[in-house]
Image (cartoon, rainbow, N blue to C red):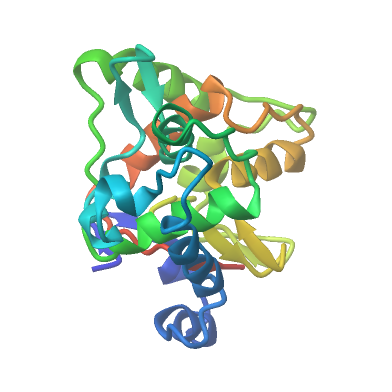
Length: 235
């Protein structure tokens, strides 16, 4: 389930104790964000509209997280789940967007992601999403930073090796947003990308940038078929 045709979820690189923590909803600290998201789902904004008012129970969101990032016809570009949440917030609730990496945005993203848990990742990379995919692919294989490393060098060529005692995974993002033990909090895919950029001493992009969305689409495609694990726990 967590390994398909050589594609391995980060779950397979965890210790038995951490895997058990993810599997147990009472021990999985990411569930705190899911619970907050459940409360926010029913909160009406100043125009009287809430998420539940448009979509009904959050269970109706099953399958959504598995297919994002996705091309958005209105914006004429690929957007990710967090941007879709904020777009709905602005258009339908006439409310200000949540700040990227805010507790509120992470909570709703975790809640929606939770509804797709167990479903296979199925992002589309053809048609109008193809250019975004190609930009993301280029970025993934591009050497960067003072260390001159690419995503592929760590997460493809050296996956399974150790770096300063840490086991290098394939860098799959089928569980995001994740509760990361290093951060002691929940974090988005873009926070993880930024952390990796800083690790190779490269200037990170801004959270929500198109560069990160393109990379997110490509990395999500690399994990195609792996189950959504949100909220996952990672080291």
